[in-house]
Image 1 (cartoon, rainbow, N blue to C red):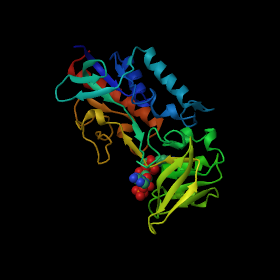
Image 2 (image 1 turned 90 degrees about the horizontal axis):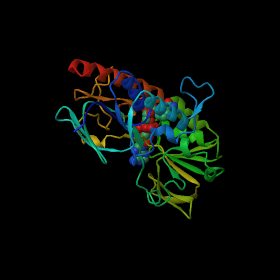
Image 3 (image 1 turned 90 degrees about the vertical axis):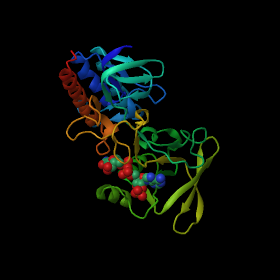
Image 4 (image 1 turned 45 degrees about the horizontal axis):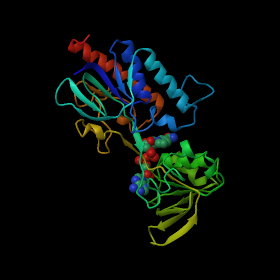
Length: 316
Ligand code: NAP
């Protein structure tokens, strides 16, 4: 079986940056960029304008930026495989990586599989119901769609994401309801103040959405007040989940140490995971910053950490 020096799993800013650095260091990286797991390029593929990535003073579209990342990784000789990694075996070195149609062994592994927005199992929001027909888990990606314009919109959550997404949606709708299960926002004080004082945002405290209904698109939601138990139907054009993210680690089957919500543990100030020779970069190990530029930075760190590990191992 083919033994590689370095396999990278993922296709966001962390994975491609790791590939650029590793390829330039002659580590001949093999990068699994995924297939069914989502679009190659990660979360920025579902974003429109990226205005905070340094180097683009006029901003750049997310997919365009990721196209540049990918092209740069390819230019220096990264082997790109458009397949999902289904499992890895880290108990024996070189590690075994099993993808949909191939298996390889590798001396070093970089995990950069990112995180996915969480959804709730509410009636009407599932795949085949109104998911992507008015129900979304990313207001910033989908909010500009014509179906949401001028409609009452509902955002579920109480953290910074929920506030940020509600504020974003006020560009397209005059009535944005923030539906939160408690009577206090988890969002930072400054963000919470913005939501509470915004003329187009109304916070529905102690509330949940029990059902989403419509015809071909979302038309209404059934709201429940958790304190009184009363329900009421309200007109709606869109429902957005903003309840946090889940790191994409299921293919690791618990072989690496993670925190209580599943983000991979790394030795502070490095990308070393709990298994020697395995490195983690990007959102899969970052619950705090979750920014493309930070992911790219940790991708670079992972490539440098892997390079040092391989040179200590005597792998040229
Ligand atoms: P978060 O802080 O974990 O907040 C998740 C929110 O969703 C909480 O209010 C939580 O309610 C609610 N929630 C979770 N599970 C739920 C359920 N089953 N039903 C109903 N509600 C549920 O996640 P986040 O807002 O995505 O933020 C993650 C991190 O990124 C934070 O550190 C945040 O500060 C940061 N961030 C920063 C910015 C910014 O500064 N511009 C923007 C976005 C994110 P409870 O409060 O009741 O637990």
